[in-house]
Structure formats: C-alpha cells, structure tokens
Length: 361
Image (cartoon, rainbow, N blue to C red; front, side, top):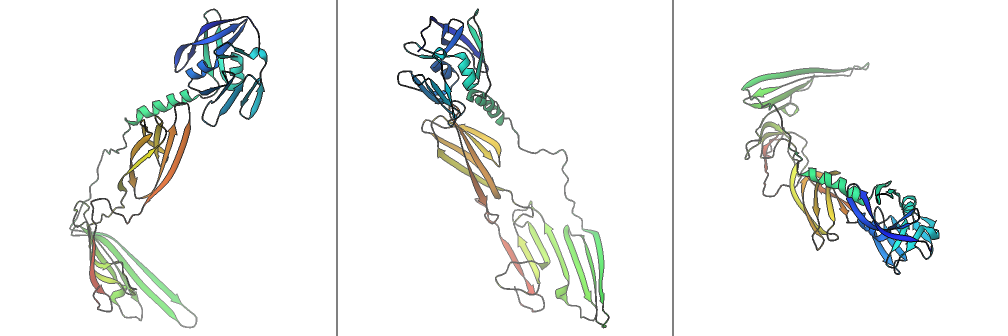
C-alpha cells in the first residue's frame, strides 16, 4: 500500500446529463483519487464491496460487462484482461478505497479533466454508460404518447353504382393445323361491366365441330356492399363453392355472405401479463416497432394490451434494470384467417344446380 501525504477533500464532479455532485476524493501531491463507491454510485454503476473495501466487483454497461478490482492482488480484471496496479494507483483510507483518476480513464474509459484551483472535475466518458442510455430511452418514451398512427386522407373517392355501364370486351382465337389433317379450332369472347349497381362478367367459348354446352360458358353478376352488415356480397350465376365431394362440373346458382370483400386485418387485443424484477422498465415491440413502455410494480408484475392482426405478429419485450441490466424475449403469435373476432358471426350460403347433371347443390 502506498504511503503518501494525502488530503481528503470533496471534489465537485460535473457529468451530463446528471449534473454536478460532490465526491469524497483524495489529493496526493499532483494526483487525484476518486472514491470507487461514490463515483460508481453517482454514475449508477453496480458495485459490491468485498473484504472490507479491499475488493470491488460489479458491471459497467450491462450485467455481462463484469469487472473485479482487487487491491490485495494489485489487479483489475475487466474485458478478459488483467491490469496490474502500482502502489501509487490506489489509496486505502480507513473506510474507503480511492483509485487514481487516470486508472478510471485507462481501464473503464471514464475520462476526467481536473482543475486544482476550483477543486472541480468534468467527466466525459468514452463509453456509453447506462445513465446515458436511460436518458435516450426516456426521451423516446416521452414521445410515445404523441404518436398518431391513424391515417388521414384529404380526398375520399366513393364508388359510383350505375344501372348499366358496359366496361370491356375481349376476344381470342386458338387454332391448330397439323400435316396429318387433324385440326383444332376454338373461339372465345369475354365481356364485363356494371349492371343494376353490381358487376357482371361473362365468357363465351366455342369449339368448332363441338356442340355448345352451357357448362363451358361462364357468366355471373356480383353485388358488393360492405356497409350492409347482414348481406355484404351477393352473387348470381356461376359460383365457386366449397364442397365435401369432387365436382367435375361448375355450379350455377346463388351465393350470399356477410363476409367483407376486403381482406381482414385486425383481429383483437391480446393481454400479456408476466413477471420480471421489481422496478424494471419493460418495452413492448410489435414487428420490431416500439409501441409501449411500462414499469414493473413492486412484485415485478407488468402488463400490456397487444393489438393483434391476422397472420403472424412478432412480439418483442426488452427489460431494463436500474444499473444498465438488459434482457429481452421474442415470441411469434399467429392468428389464422379462419378465426373470427369476438362477438362476430360470419355465414356463407350457396344454392344452385350442378351444370350438365341437374343435381341440386
């Protein structure tokens, strides 16, 4: 242990964003020594005192960034390295351990500029300390309530329903001529437009030397009104229907449903409730976007209301302790499109004839 003439004086230490505080310090000649417990306590760096102040253990940036300062062995273990200490690098003064300011800079990146005349120092860390990270997160958290995720449009284009409006017509000819005299010719036409406020479309197919069969002709009229909660879609003509048996002919008939024509997006709200360590801050990320933050209560309980959409949703949680501890978890929540929202009933009715057989479906 170094025997030097030292004076114990309070030093004013300034550090943004935490402001200024007075630290118990030692001045030995031209050298400045900070109290390890007071400096790390001011910077909210987790430390544990072992063996009557002769050893300090803790972590700097997070719980995995561990260090051990052992004056009996004259060593500091940090970042998988062993740094040897000289006797002049520390002072043990009754109730505390003091380490030279240059050691804090060399080992931990805590650079200070000391003014002997005013007995003040300015700390400019070369690493991002937990308190700096917390200040940045607090700024982001403060802006969460002001976010507006609702889209506002300046113009709304409404759908015009016409009694009759012929849209388009197409035609095509397919022909095959072979040297052995075998030929194949097919003619097709298609059309579409508006009729009685709904959509009509059709296609006429004709194969040369073959009779015209209704099963080969396509036609339908479809009315969509998503504002009507009882009947949103009505289709007459050739309809596509789910079936328990194999159908080799199209079905001509009626299809009615209250399902909307657009793809469903919002499913509902899912509650996440779990435990972490008391007083920890918890961030909620949905598809890698920060949407909410909360603080665990005295039992460590936290709760979020998570909006879910159809398909897959990635829900991430990040946990922050008071000394820079960080933990995280990710879970995938999948909502099938076949599931309905709470309190909602969808139906689909189909009726008609199987073309060419006369069977009622």
